[in-house]
Length: 313
Image 1 (cartoon, rainbow, N blue to C red):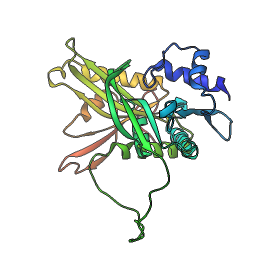
Image 2 (image 1 turned 60 degrees about the vertical axis):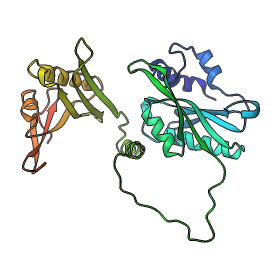
Image 3 (image 1 turned 90 degrees about the horizontal axis):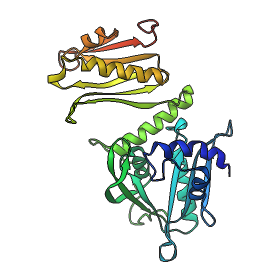
Image 4 (image 1 turned 120 degrees about the horizontal axis):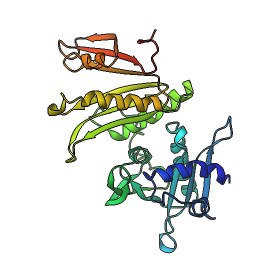
């Protein structure tokens, strides 16, 4: 097993301190001892067929010895540089197949960080359920004390179909918010887009301003991918809108986008919102969607972050 290749991203993930309860300053020898499960446990890697690079890894074994040895457990790490390409899903599916073939009756995850919504959504999409949460059991470096989920799914054969009726066909449902579906669609589209373009640098970007009392002054959410920063939401508290916070928040986001390699930014703003604000900060109009919502207009704006052309050609 290529431990140096695993260690190269293991170290980065653990040092970030957001998803694993390992010591952030763990050394390679201690990390190897923790990760490399001994037989009858198993360690796997996901490898890029073209380059041979190790993209992710999993370890799996019985969750407990003795009377608990009929339930499996597993852990997964994916190189952050290839997030969104389906590596994590492939690792989980492989471990489920191993556990089923080895005769385990179920698989249990003991410490899934509550704020790791991408992992929680992935596990749920593969049949796992949260069976309990320990409040505040994980000290997140940015979010403070967050919960740890215990997640479980049963294993075994496919469910039997009654002989008294036809096999159910595909189903189509319409509903409201579905975070599991959102995570799955995001994962699939990121994988498709990355394969089509070679750009696998998608990331979320947030900026937050708080007053001395800890109350929110304003904030911004955006996405960066393929050299473009797309601003989704920007809001400033009413009593702070004349203090320049909107511009400070926007400039902070642009600076971070530049650091990530973006050379342009885009945003849409309704006519009753702030297209004038963006124009004052160097954005130029590139199009309009009239009548959205009602009699208003959605204004689309663009800005070069490197002093190049002010609008795309």
